[in-house]
Image (cartoon, rainbow over the protein chains, first blue to last red):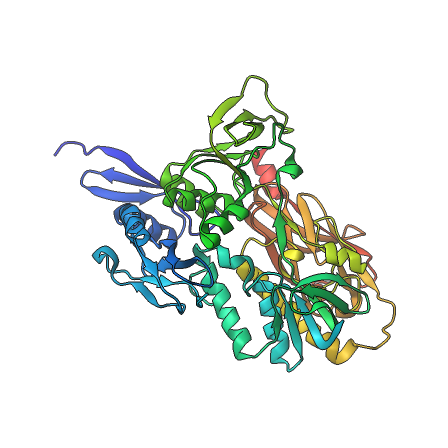
Length: 126
Length: 432
């Protein structure tokens, strides 16, 4: 086997604490190793960010005849980062009718991503 | 004029006001909340992003969820509140005057008042940007309200001035709503908001962050057509020849927050240099029985810190009503707390000597970022009372220390203590 090439494939800025370590994902042959983290949580974060970056999505849904014209919502689980815009477009097609309670599921299993869109607050009728 | 009585009046129904009112009510005192908006909750209602509540609720909530939990408690405890009601004056005698549509002018007589009015955003007027006054210039929080509550987009292409947290969060929010954010421009050489927001709101969406630059001209007469940004030198003076034009139809300003203290001032309470009222270790202002908590006292970076401070104010109000109200206490003997090197301000501003045996929570901010520092408290005779090392300090992070000064060996006759954040002596030697 030839001398395996070593290269930095991604630099991840750790957001676990304000120190903000620069963590490098380094490819060594067929392995990926992480360098530059200073705590266990930092390594966990870097691994998650490298292999499967996910985010909680928070946005609003239009409301018909509500106390307010919009209701704030979020995904109840983090979803793949690359799916965020598809989910946003799906949410934009939806209109809900009050009354709504915090935690109510407004869209179930959105785009089959194993995450529901839930209400972030109560909302009464107009 | 209708007249009411309540043991305690809380002005403002944001996280601070609600947390304080709940604390007071749990001690079986009467409390009335007065709020100028049409519902309880305050600014967290429009902060629809997540990241709130890790300390208070030990889970990650959105702003509206955080508010809703407090609102639910207020309703369970049957705490009375007035909505759409604007407090227009408070007095030393603890009379509160407010107006609303149903009752006109009302008077509430209280034993104690908790100020929880929050803060407001600096506007274009505070930073003097040349140019005409076209439409399309908003503060970031104002745009946040339009987008998240009212359901309007203020424009299509944006430049955001200031890298405060609301500005960065709005950059992501607007991107998600299909808008184009051309740049976030920051006059300092570093980001002023949290790192987490820089990474997840800007870097995730390739939104350029331009540090050491500021907006030096606004173009357009009817509607903003673009801005000129220029590089700044050490003293924030514009560097000639560094101008760049960026086309945009909207400019958002995220350039700082100011505690909202008009009522405080009119009541005759003293303010300190940070814009909040001067308070002692009980969070009591210079007027007996008027307390302050939350962003009206000092701008916090986390709402959980507001909640913790508000609960503390609530507890101190209970103590005041149960043991000090209506009594003529001796003239206060105090120690002043002075911000020293690389410290912007410190709360409390004064400490009552009678409370020296208790733990005191000090909160303060540094002026500029630094690494490997020593935080030291020294008295007016230069004697060091307290020392603590810290790896990293940054102006956007409020520092909090819990110290028992008596156990630290403070001289009870001292007149003032100064708080410094300085490079560690051993670090200086190492780098020599």
